[in-house]
Length: 112
Image (cartoon, rainbow, N blue to C red):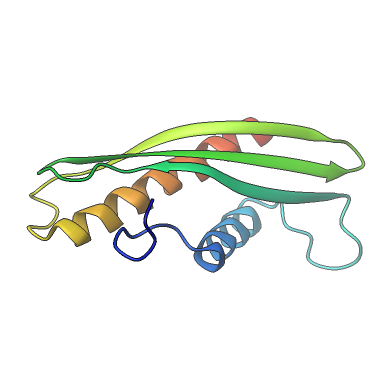
């Protein structure tokens, strides 16, 4: 992925999305020392070069450490169509966001 021409997913927005989702679902420590730590690594963000309908595939590995250790590789897809936006850059951003949203959603399913 060429970060100068293709929109990706930045570390800070991903961190903010994870923190807010984990907090909303009761998985984020409010005080004290947490029992577990979560690390997320985007392994691949497969984006098309052109198209009216854009499918983005997000491959993220989540690692949990602390009292126990586990690794969860999760692959998801997000789609944006021409009806979402006539601008290709907007469609790519929308598809990226949807792919990452689904990825975090699947992480919550694994944690439950």
